[in-house]
Image (cartoon, rainbow, N blue to C red; front, side, top):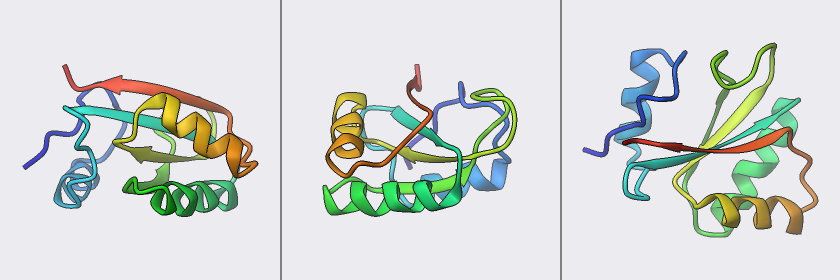
Length: 102
């Protein structure tokens, strides 16, 4: 089982287990979190990342990452690849953060 980075606080334990069961965080214990202002952009990003070959998951943005409301996509893809996919598909995002599992 792959471990989900503990630095991403504010996630419910059952959500972390669900993410682990999908084995989506496979980049040596690292996760990239992309935040969005709407669920529409988050869903578009998830689809674009999956077309590019990266597993991802849409979730509510944890308070420790960004205050206020919003949605995030969590993926095992490297930060530079995520940014490139967002730019190529003209998907507007708030931030891209690399969260290490170490």
